[in-house]
Image (tube, rainbow, N blue to C red; front, top):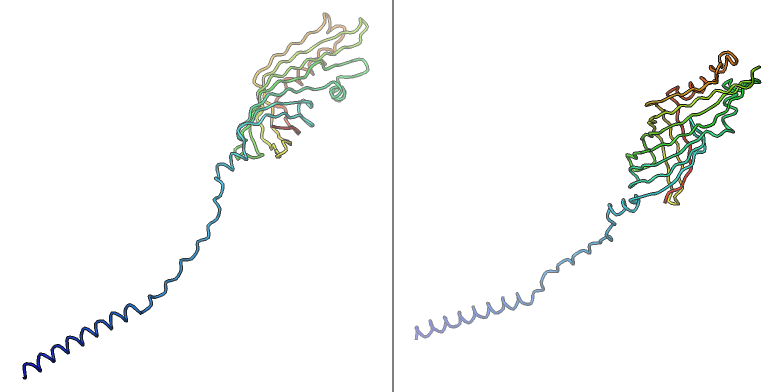
Amino acid sequence: MTKFLVAFSLVLASAAARAEDRTVATARETVPAPATAAPEKVQTRPAQPVQRARVDDEHQMFHVGAMFGLVSLPRPAEGEVFVKFMDFFSVGFSYSDFPNFVADPVLRAAGVQTATTQARLDEFTAYEGNFRIHPFQGAFFFGSSFGHQSLHGAVTESTDAGPQTGTADIQTLYATPRLGFLWSWNSGFLLGVDGGVQLKLSSTQTVTLPPNADLFAPNLRSDVNKYVDAGASYPLPSFHFRLGWQF
C-alpha cells in the first residue's frame, strides 16, 4: 500500500511539472514582441553637377576675337585679332598707325611746322605679336608685345635757292611688357585697359638731305633730326583703352 501511494505521488508531481512548463511556454508565445522604432527616412539631395563640368562650361576651350583701340599710345589708331585658350592664355596680332590728322598738331607743337618750314609724317606704323597670360582665368593679365615700328617723315624749307627737302627713316624692333584688365561678358563684348612701356631692342636710322643743304637751308638738318629723335628716343609710354568682341 505504501509503495502504491509513493508511486501515485510521483505521477502527480510529474503531471504538475508538465502543466507548469506548458503554461510558461504559452505565456511566452502570447507576450507581444517589443515594438521596434521604424527607421528614419534619410533625406537625399539630388546629385550636384561635377565641379569640373562647371569649369569647362565657364571657360570654353577657344575664343576668337577682335579689339579696336579708342585711346592708345604711342600710336592712337590700332586693331588686334587674337585667339584665347581656356581663358588662360592668348596670342594675337595687331596693327597700329598714327594718322596725319593727329600728326599735324603734334608737329606744330614740336616746333617743326613754321611759316617757312613744312613737315609731314609719311608713316608711323607698327606690327606686333602679342601674348597675354590670365593667371586667375579672369580679367587681370600680364604679357608683352614684340613688334616692328616704321617712322618716315620729311621736312621742306623754303629758301632763296628753292624748296629744300630732307627725309628721315627709322626702323625699330621693340618689346612692350604690359599688364592690365580685359573684361568679357557672356554676350561676347570686351572692354580692356592696359599700360606698359615700349623698349627698343634695335633700330636703324637713315637721313637723306639735298646737296648743299647746310649752305642753303642751315636748319634743315636739325629739323630732320627731330624725326630721328622722336623715333629713336626710348622708352616710350604704352597705353591702350579698347573695345572688342569675342566668339
